[in-house]
Length: 234
Image 1 (spheres, rainbow, N blue to C red):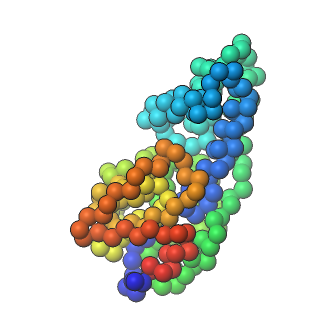
Image 2: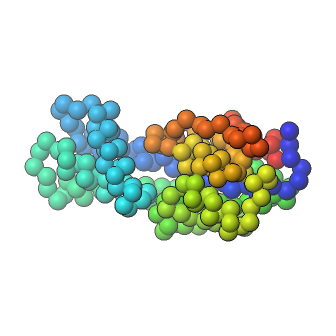
Image 3: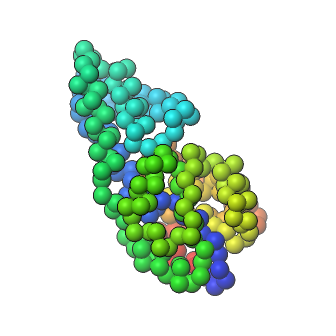
């Protein structure tokens, strides 16, 4: 059922509005080929990297620069040959290219944002990551005219959603988090008392793909097929 009264839609950016994780996957594939480990499978190598990344996220956060740091650390840990400075420069270059990738908007995003704005819904972009990297992506994208605010945080956890709710005096019944990540978009938003719309992406980062929580008795969780489905909810 479409809601005709104005709603506040808090919308994720990476892999909800535009492609993001595919570029990290490309960098990872290049890393695997360069490492060329004689014994560890790709899955085993990834498991080692994930341990490094999970530990470093708590200290350094997200983004391409931190991804580069994590890959260099993984290479130092797993390389079967003498490591030269040029080797680490090569590893870092795989991630550096992420910063220069074009902004590839997902299908129907701009048209749907325009539709939502025309219907007087209040749009807030809410993303996590390295502030400079995220701001650069926002500036290079065409989404500026559609959102009244852009909020970038280090981590999108329950506390972050509670702070956002206080900042904008959000009304839980008419406020929705829209995104592709159960871990960062849907589950903490529900726990903070908001409604949510899950917009799955086939290439969502593995560490973000946790099971979806069930909404509370006074909450609503919509599961969309794609971003354009928002026009059927709002």
